[in-house]
Amino acid sequence: MTFTPERLGGGINHMVPLLLARWLASDLPAATSVFKHVASLWNGTGFLDGAALQSQRFSTRDLTYFLWAARATAGVKGFETQPSMLAAVEARLWALQACEGGTAVAVSYSGEGEALCPPRDGWGAGEQLVSIEANAMALSLADPRMTTVWFPRKLG
View: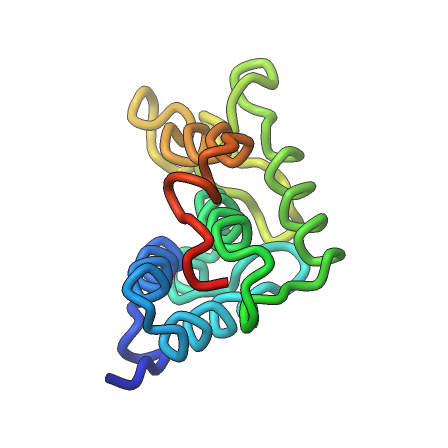
């Protein structure tokens, strides 16, 4: 199967699990194709995927999904990423740790990179607090099992 942007779905949160599944299934051409597409969506502030275009805001979880893909495939041919891009994505993620007194990351952020913490997040009073998904994924990025247990270097 050929993976085209149309077949990938609109969000990074759909694309990254697909590329990791393809990588674990030893389908390197598909996995690297999706990875390169995801990386190409980075505009220096966020990942300009279909969801960002539709909502006119960036999703914080996209940053964590990309960092998961980059860390899981680090050192594997075809998944090379510029260190400056990785540093910029990670810096953006931690800059968004602005909600709840600086203890949690926002669900989304503006095109200028400003965290949209409640009540300015567009969800309505009491409906959304912070991104549990992005918070958990961000914390797990530092887990040493990333490349030893979860995504072992069987393909390197």
